[in-house]
Amino acid sequence: MTNPLKSIRIGTMIQATEGKAAENIAAIADRGFESFEPFFWQTTNGQDLAELGKRCRDAVGDRDIEISTLGMFGNPLEDEEMDRQTLQGWKDCIDNAHHFGATCIAGFTGRIRNKPLTESLPRYREVWSELARRAADKGVKIAFENCAMDGNWQTGDWNIAHNPDAWELMFNETPDDNIGLEWEPCHQMVYLIDPMPQIRKWADKFFHVHGKDATIRWEVIREHGVFGKEKFVFMRTPGFGDSNWTDIISELRLAGYAGAIDIEGWHDPVYRGDLEMTGQVMALNHLKAARGGHEFIAESAAYAGGDPSLA
Image (spheres, helix red, strand yellow):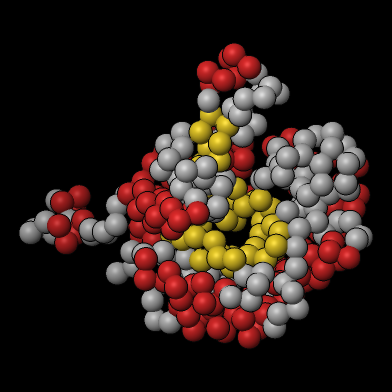
């Protein structure tokens, strides 16, 4: 019988830019992760993605682990050399996703630098309409992470997909069914947006979910505001922040989400450095518990007389 708990898999992100994605997967594949998201920062560094995909799948071996999503993070809307490499990276990831077993590519939309968000929309439409067609031909979805990268409505560098008002504009420009979001609660909490109602409204556009949380220091906000010298919010590994992941996963299930929650580490101010993987494994177990535990127990097998709902 298929394990319905794993309709939402819990995994983690894997750094792939430096060419060691397969080795990184092999190093932690027995820690209990159920999925991996190999990701590139701005460039693939000219790697043969078909060969890399094979090596990543070989590293997984016969374990029940999926690679459903690849990450390609950079600014493909601008025209500096690294921006052009990011755009080419998106094309290469789309074309080679099947070598990893992936059906989704995630990253930033890009942005016209240091301009109001709306001034990026024409270039956004030009680039992403073409990439959406390319992806559709390959059976691939595109998911934009909801991270502001320190930008806002008036200015920024990397991404316009960080605010629900921007999502409305974006999806009007690109109404393609295979363009959606790589969502996480953290990036909304950082801007004091309640993430929970977003699940109910936008879940049909959630193609991938990141496991990342935040701790908000409301006493700092009340005394110093959000523009003072005191830090009012910290990005956290799930299990150490403010979010109720049982509620989040319940809402995701109610909305019909089926996919991975891949932990995005390397942000927690406490569980970092030598404690990084300790924190990630804690988050893995915390998220598994929040989705209903580690073990699926079929109801019909739990009772001597069979399924009691049929009595």
